[in-house]
Every structure is written in structure tokens, then in C-alpha cells.
Amino acid sequence: MSVTIPPGGSAIGSALLALGDRWTLLILQRAFVLHTRRFSDWRAQLGVSDSTLAARLRDLVAAELLVRAPYDDNGRTREEYLLTPRALELYSLFLVIWGWEQASMPGAKDAPHLIHDKCGQSILPHLGCGVCGTAPVTARETTAERAEHAEFAKISVPRLHRRAQETGTPTDAISYFPQTMGILGDRWSTAILAASFIGIRRFNAFKSELGIAPSILSDRLRRFVGVGVLHAPNDAGEYRLTAKGMGFFPTFALIVDWAQRWYAAAPSRELTIRHTACGAPLHPVLFCSLCGELLERTTVHFEFSPTTTQRV
View 1 (cartoon, helix red, strand yellow):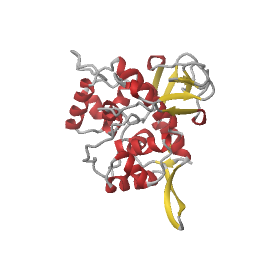
View 2 (cartoon, rainbow, N blue to C red):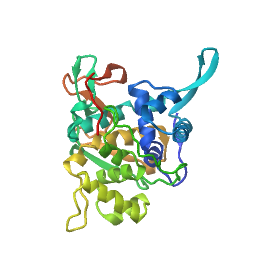
View 3 (cartoon, rainbow, N blue to C red):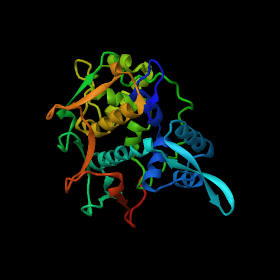
View 4 (cartoon, one colour):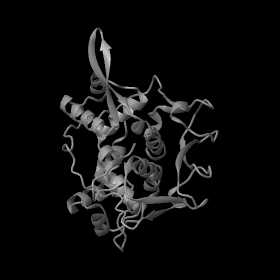
């Protein structure tokens, strides 16, 4: 079941509002990879304060990404949190984020291995077209078509909490690298990167498209240039994606697909990513980099090395 978005908003903007926070992403990641379900376990794994964790869990329940479920604890009834069907479909998103880190980050060699149970190998997830079966599909092999009133990343609903003040984001091997959190751990950063994929290049175009404050936009663009995701502005004042930035396309494609299936929006506000090779709207799916078989949530798992050390 989809949720109707507020007037003036967008499906993708609503998705970024739900996901664009570092603690939210880490909570969901642990639920997928470590099957974490309980408040005390998230607190121990993440080192997050009780108040921040409680606020994020409330937000995730309100967004219908987690659901509370009772369990028996030695005769006492307590609550744990289970992933909803809407959240379970995000598993592909977490796989491609991990894959981007493997390709883009020096030092990613200490990360866990993704094992495809069907071929038994350590693999990478390749974005493919679910219509024609082609994989991998890159940003250059697609086009983005905007409907008449599409404001794909307009975020019109204010956040319910301020940006977390804690600096102790976990640095164990399962956690995301700081550069990844700089892109995905903030809704504006993710929106800017998404806008880049549909051809937004100039400062004023970003500002108009996203409804973002100039000071925030300047800060995020400066960070993206610093981490090598965007080139410094050229003589025309254009910020263009680097190869590292283009590698984030699978994340963008999956967010767009997930958002427009789970957050109801008028057709006039939709964004269509089209696979140029077959001419069909891209139905993003993941394939195994070695055997070419479709990757499903139930056919992959992460394998951790006993010698893996914490990241610094």
C-alpha cells in the first residue's frame, strides 16, 4: 500500500525525508545485516544516545518502515521492531551502497564479503534492467524524463528533529565510510546528487529545483567537490559528476523506483528513468557480477572475516 504525499511535495522528496539521516540508515542497515530488532541491541552496536535512538525508531514506525511487535522476555512482555514489506524492498539499496564503497573507497578491503548463495562466490551487485535483462546498466545508458509538474526532490515537509549532534558514528567494518555518510546521511546531500543525475549543473538551478537555502547548497557542493563526487565548477559555472559520482547511479535509480512505488504521486509529478538499449522504463534489479543470476534478499548474505579491524 502506498502513502499519499502532501500537496506540493514529491514521491522522491518524501523518500529522502524518510531515509536521509545517518542514524536512520544505520538502524536499517543493522536490521538487514545483523537482524537487529531490539532497542538495547541498536544502542550497543551504534553507540547512539537513548533519546536519538528513540526518536529515529519513532520516525521509522511513523514512516511504516518498522513495526512494533511484542515478545516475551522471561515472563515480561516487551517490544521489538520488525522490518515492514516497504522496508524489506530497500535491501537492494543497501547492497548497491556497499558495492559503491568497494569500487570507490581506498581501504574498503576490510569490509565484509557479499556472498551469493547460488554460486557460493564473493560478488558485487550489478544494476540491471529487469525488462531486457541487461547488466550492468550505467547512468550513461539511461535518460531521465520528467513529467510536466515533476519536482522530483522538492522536500516540502519539515524534519521532525534536528540534525544529530553526536560525533561518535560507529567505525566498525560493517558501518559506512564517512564519505558515504556525507552523501547519504543528510537529505539535502542526497537530493543534490539526485538532481545531478537529471542534468542539474548550476548553483541557481540546484537552488530553484530543490528549494534549498544558498548557504546549505554552498556547503554541500563544496563537500562534494572535496570528496571527488563533483568536479569543481567549470568556466560556465557547472558542477559535473566525476566518475566516482557517476558510480552512485544505482543508488539513485533504486531510490527513484522505490519512492514512486511506495509514495503515491500524480502522474504529472513522476520521473521516468528510461533504459535506452530496450526503450523501456528502467525496472532496476540486481544481478550477480560472477554468475549473472538475479540477486534476491534471500539468496545473499554478508560474511565477516575474524581478522577484520575497526576503521579509522
